Image (tube, rainbow, N blue to C red; front, side, top):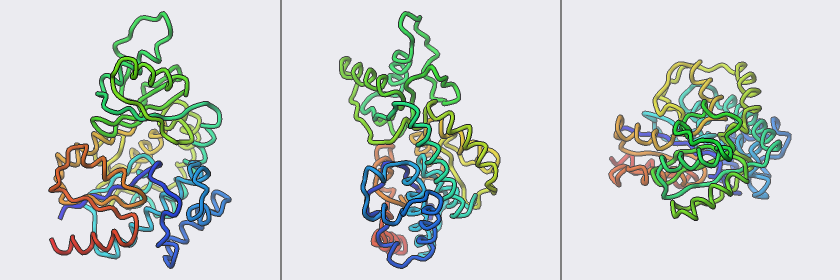
Length: 334
């Protein structure tokens, strides 16, 4: 049976996530204790009681999300459910490193903690955020991004709006951050530029914009300082070749070279998440029987359907142990 494991990123969290893991899961509690030591914060209390605003801080949220997803993953494995492929969305890609055997669970939590702290630090140096763009084709989004970024009086540059973060300069005040689905794109950058973009979308009847409650302009040039420091720091972590096929956000392909995987994980801080392309690649090359979203929320499950997967492909939400019991029962019956 062809099964794909999906791991969510920021935005999937909720106060109380992982509540059933805290009751008696020693491995999970060790991961949360490690995250608490790294962040100098009682993350068990924050996870179960909030407040939600504090939980949104990347330095706390990222190691917690990784720990919760890895906690449920351990139970998935104990149930005898094995993946044919793993991938994660943004921060979820760190979780997928552990799920594929590239790094141990403890290193994944440490990577997430360092990543989140550096991202928060970079965000504190700017006035940035993110915004969802709905019902607007990608080419039109790129055209409008180029227009908003173009200095007043400068000629139109038809080469602007590349989907590759490597081409973004610090002059780009707003960039493509996530290409999630044909009708869902996320842009990131300076708040004033986001306001301009939203206003133009509304005035021209191009689609709909919706603010996202995040702590900073992720996947943008505003994270360059975080990228530099993270790139140097992560060299100390040993990356192994994946034992389970691992698809990366930047290439929408399975990658096996540990050196390349480490670089792609670092570069993701300033590059876009190409989730739609990942879903297309999974659908076209694997034709999976089921996808399991392992971790808080149901965001990735929703993106499965809007990216063209029919109801023949079953989607399971493993955001509590009850969801795992259902998946185990139904998969055993097939």
